[in-house]
Length: 113
Image: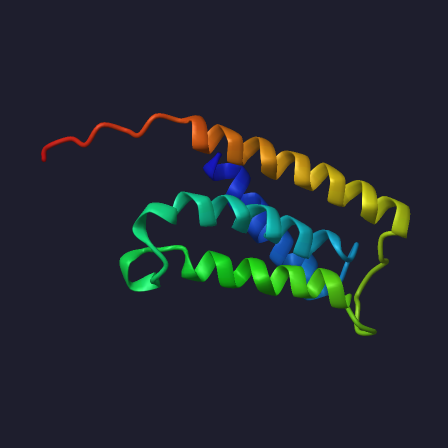
């Protein structure tokens, strides 16, 4: 799961910065941030306590980029609207599946406490 999260964050960041296949980059980031927000939910909202403040902020920015579009400065082709819709549905399904696995997982036993 960590490899998938890292790949979606890095790949989504590269796609977002370059504007290639827009809006695929922000979609990947949004999916990763939904799961990251859920991972940090028990620590509370504040980032100082490793809470969900930063992932939730990143999620909001990714949704904003999805909504507003990539603008005119892009380095590559954009996704056609039909492919963007398909990517949104597929990304939602993958993020939902990851979220379900996370919420069903039993907490790890603390060692040495």
